[in-house]
Image (tube, rainbow, N blue to C red; front, side, top):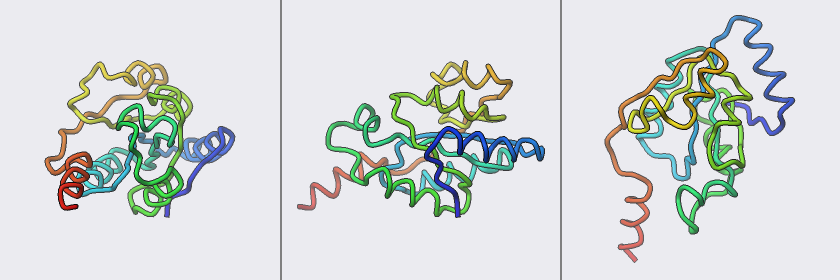
Amino acid sequence: MGIILEKQEDIDRHLGELKKQGKSVVTTNGCFDIINGSHIRMLKNAASQGDVLVVGLNSDRSNPQWTGPSRPIRNEMERSEILAAIEYVDFVVLFDERDCIDFVRRVKPDVHVNDASYGENCVEAAAVKESGGKLYLIPKFEGESNSQLIERIRNLE
């Protein structure tokens, strides 16, 4: 079971100790509103890139900027708990910013995993490289998006 980290000091303490032990840290991020098969495949793939997977999670305040005013459906605590229960996830970190740049700068990952559709010049690329990390892009996993799933459910009403 993963650990939900709520404070900067928690991140520094946990990850600092793991890095001293020579563990490689991998990050990825997102809203993870309704976990689906594509999320699970992506998290498994991300976890395979190092020893410790840290998931940056958009808070309830930052999420609507990406998903619209009616989302998230699940609140940040529920989303955190669900992510922490996934076997591939070691830590979950909430962030309020619109993008994950500050999260990446705090964690200083060895590898940051992102959807290939964002490309090599994604918003977090510079922050990853600042601390000597590398960007690992994975192809978008085919399947129904959460927006498509929600639309299907609404059409059933």
